[in-house]
Length: 471
Image (cartoon, rainbow, N blue to C red; front, top):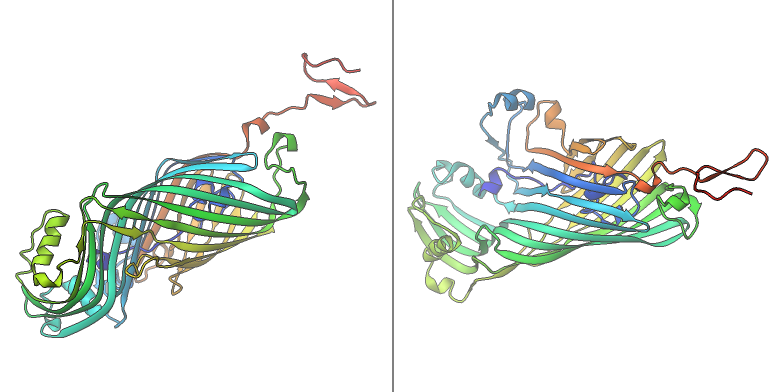
């Protein structure tokens, strides 16, 4: 219920993930990005990504402005949008822990840690959303039989530890092909989901409601380490280089004068979050089919833990409606998605990026665990400073304008800055930051001096007392 009144949508931090200085931040979108970026060693200390959005509840522009209300801690009442549409929302919270990427010749290695929460409410009927917002005391919806179909609420929280590897697989003149893979060990922390095929009900009064048809399934897992699993990110990147290179070219190699050849454009393709968590500890899955009941005194509904909650719900329905339809374990897919990235170099450190992310469900009952996004991001980047302006459509419907900055290794940005600038109806909020330590070149490239130099009239001259005499 909480997800319908305060929800967040999944963003990919497009203001920074496609940068040539992204380092650890580019790996979750495409692990092959670390092979030939402009950071030799990148160490992430801490990071946070939070985006709040929904299409039901909001702060009105008539009584809310971020820089007035938030600093004064004076928040107005939340309003709800009754436009007759189905209500959707998504939550994606990511906390980046210690992570690192390291380039070694033509190869790149990485490790990552993160805590994540991904949740969605999909196609919730407006009467259901209104009952959650107002409670059963809302009189205008009493005595009406509502027949709702095909909606759900899903939430999943987990920790992950990943190991990444990438390499240059083909290099010829102006063409470079890179591949990368990340294997992630998953630790399920908590889970709660409900998929309703049909939910027909009538609110009788403040304390009682009648359910005529409850055809649904739910899954619960007690907070803690309740599940384990594996997931993979796989990516490939093609670069069209600005100048030809030899087949033995190695970026930032001291034997190659520590240079790196820039690209005219690059194209990346990746599959991300392909995997699932198996919940088997303090967990329950249950299915109901055509189950009716009269739910009395719903406010007197105490529970302590997953099994107590499941027992309370199950006791409200006839036993023959759920007999043989319960299981102490279940599996849940991560929000798997495919992504396409196109980056063009205009020269003079100016780039433009197109990112497309399309999520898809991996099982029939997991309709809500998906994400979709398309964005165009112009940016200016040099070694110490970077600025980008992501313009995106979340779920291909909701436009957003963002802004992101990098000052050496401090990154701060938002993919939705409009609420910070002008008073508007606020349905969402987004901010992300990362604190990192970056080395842009192999230490062997720093302070390297020539051992010999040419005399004016030819021959070699020693620059070091231990060098052999020049003849």
